Length: 128
Image 1 (tube, rainbow, N blue to C red):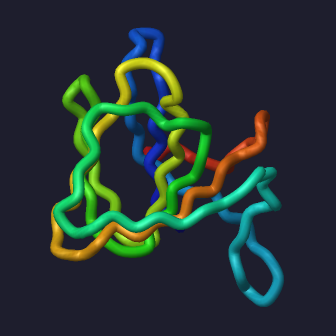
Image 2 (image 1 turned 60 degrees about the horizontal axis):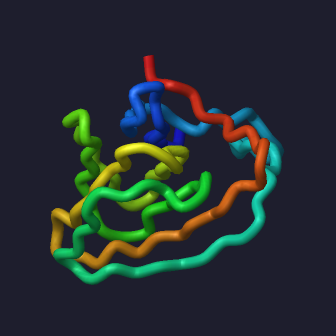
């Protein structure tokens, strides 16, 4: 199971977060996998240790895969969640009040942005 946090904009125009995971199905050789996801492009980014980013929305609907660093995210409604290496953010809050983040350990935040094609279904499952 791959941990995933989904951020989206609610009817109140604020960002909301929900914990979940990427739903994987049995595959060849005992692996677990998803089907192929429609993406337009991917890019890498690194932010120095101690970095922060104040209130903002996601520029596009995207997956953000943390490679190093530990982050604390916050919504304007006061929700907090953390992301660590190997975890995924499904950023769908492209309008509204947005979210902020800060690095909370001494490592840089290295991440992979995967921009999703319009209409792509991500196999996100909300945690029970």
